[in-house]
Length: 189
Image (cartoon, rainbow, N blue to C red; front, side):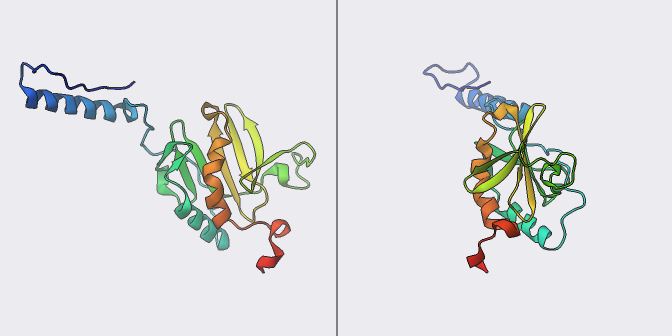
């Protein structure tokens, strides 16, 4: 819902100052209700489970660097706090687009796991970041697939095409998350 406050040529019976204050109060009340009447994102904390076990050593450093590099807006949606304010989680929009850094290797990429099948696993690359794609009920989970530490992004179907948030996340991931040994640049050593 959009609230439009118009200033017309007529005068309010209560006087122009009082009418202006009433309009401002109405606008503030509207913005406070359910993240605003202008269609803005919710601002409250989002419940995002941090990776378990928590990243340690170099993985912790990488995830903290990624957290510092993440944008304030993803796919046009504002960043929101996550419950517990974990350095390994982030969220944008409502419903929330979520990110977790330092998650475990997906079973689809783990040789010997019953879900491992390199021939049918969906993979894609967005701006030089490779992702495993897993469609779930009402959302798509993307997990980096050629990185030393895994980053997971979950995008609700409300944001179709669900790949769009990855465009805003590619540069921070490339800048902070090192590639796995197979995909590392030998010239960088």
